[in-house]
Length: 379
Image 1: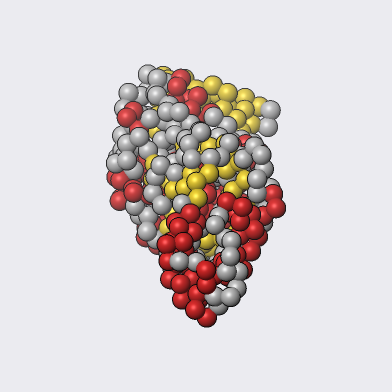
Image 2: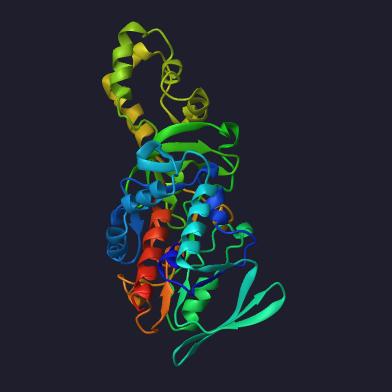
């Protein structure tokens, strides 16, 4: 929809869904975390970390906010620069549809692509809508199919199939921004408990909330590091991200020294979590009995909790798909395939994957804009 709104008249968008923008509608608890104030190319994973820079710099989060302002859509900022609609995610969908209408683009829902082939002056597409076959002969084709995440919403690997059909390389794909699972279900007794952490998995640290579930670990911090995690590798969790626990316990040693160390620790961490960790921690005795070295050892253990997930919940609940159409085969300025003139790939279908927090939507807006204006410039 973003690309169609900028590509000029006589654009047809085909979508096999019953309604437009369903992933927009369900995002952000129904209010759509549509971008992030701090969005840069550094917030994305790709085999080419520089690829996203061109689109993101030429169509920024501020440009998208200007678009919202023109449509009278109110928004607010939550934590870490995340921006949400005040009213509903449906406002974003309506805005994009209005932009398409203004540009003269058509939207065909309940429509499937059956065949796509190259011709001398463009493409030949066979589509099926309401049981009827149609043939389109576009000069350009933009593939905006997303990835495999949330298949119940209709997600498939169609975009990757089209890329391979035309000789483009598709990098390995897997579920990302997804909860971790553990085969022995070790955290069942803490299911529903959330606590702030600082975590990493062969990537940057993320200081956000972690949620214990009946299957494993979720919450923003876990979703973030899942994009950097490899099967069989450990994850590292700091349960005292503010790094003030040692000072607090040492200060309490004089006033509350007669209390059990476990009791005092439960004032700083959730009691259920302390109970769970107790067998593996040196929590015997009273606080007054603990030397500075003993307190430092305890804090060090809490700051360096290492776990080894069995896997993740997969595409079923993943917010995005990591990997996709190899950027080496695409122009970073226009998103056009270098070896197939007129064929463009945008958004999640490309090997550009954002952090949690509105980044993936911004990539959709920016890459869609880049492809759209490139086509419009053809006249």
